[in-house]
Image 1 (cartoon, helix red, strand yellow):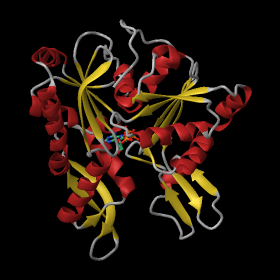
Image 2: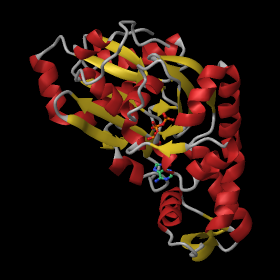
Image 3: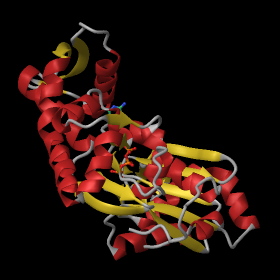
Image 4: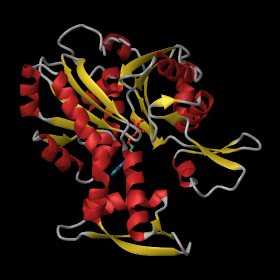
Length: 342
Ligand SMILES: Nc1ncnc2c1ncn2[C@@H]1O[C@H](COP(=O)(O)OP(=O)(O)OP(=O)(O)O)[C@@H](O)[C@H]1O
């Protein structure tokens, strides 16, 4: 997977198809889509009922003939037809009209660092099926590093930890390329499951999926000293609705075990690096990107476990698509002329 900045500057659309969210950047407009990667379908007629946020709100609330489908899993398009229908509905008229006017339209897509050829093919087919004549693939780690403002083109090591929904990637970059990397199957979904399990064990409460995010938010905005958050759910034995006050410290403790895999991956990547690179990283530290980077306390936990400075990107969730967009707009300069390679 190699693509030059010149090839990217000819693209007009950048797409990041994630397990949790789909993001689209339109040249000269910026991010025009940032929506859940979810589609609600009528299983009898095959008709699309809702896409994005309205489809996600239906999860767990659908009658038998409606199914909420997620066409992307772990950064891989698993249902190409549904992914195309979802993208078409999300981008709306703006891109569809541009696509019709300019049939030679090129698109750039973020692709997971370790993507197999079949995964690459699925991403390309999704976009060509929508009318793109050429699709450029860019490593999502490089795109996110650019989007988070890391000086990827410098002869200096930078470390990025991309915390997604299904997976997290740890990588060290230097001179526009990835020097060392590891992927762990830990992301927001596993963390949410650990929270749900904790409430079931400690409070005999079945927490609805939609209530996990407000709990994260309550933990992040809790004033110092306030250690409780109110959550609602279904009582395991009576089946009735009830609310409980949850000790946020115990929730933090419950999510620590899955996060240790992330720390192990950081250590593994450091072991693969030359001492000069590790010395750069000791100064510059780790940049956290991806939606799960917003998990309250993740940065301090990683700081404590690694002894390195840890920073969260300004807009961690959209770093990859913003970085790819910056490449399309020609806002990225590389000191060397090599293609952006893995
Ligand atoms: N404020 C927040 N606090 C904690 N977690 C959050 C927050 N906002 C989003 N998340 C989590 O971030 C995850 C989504 O991250 P992101 O948008 O980077 O995923 P994605 O790119 O779709 O996934 P992947 O890279 O795995 O394909 C979800 O699991 C969500 O629960």
